Image 1 (cartoon, rainbow, N blue to C red):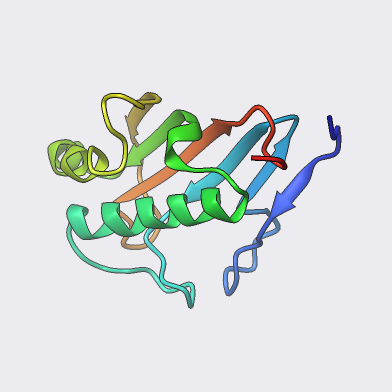
Image 2: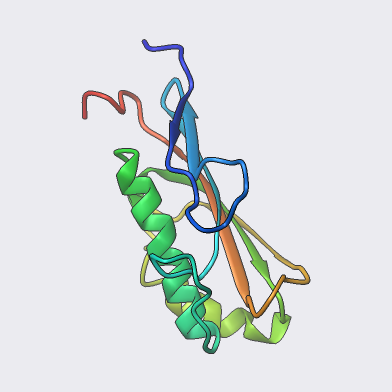
Length: 131
């Protein structure tokens, strides 16, 4: 098994020194994803709009590394306003089914800018380079 650490993508137009994901020995750690478009601009809108953009970004990072939503073991969710919890869950359940539901923690956190949500995850695949 490859014991090296692999890093996937760096955020463009953000100027921060971190990878979108890093993985080793089948584990993949995806950095917090927010509702940004391909140019790095924040997508404004209600929780549904921002949740969908955030989860689309999370899915894209997973796929860039050769993983999928079914490989996700744990999800961390930060929500700016706890009153948006139900609206977030309506979008979330379109990405993660009960059959493949990962463990999850959701907390309230003050967000930067006009962000309503941030999501990170940990995924696992037995042989990510061969599957």
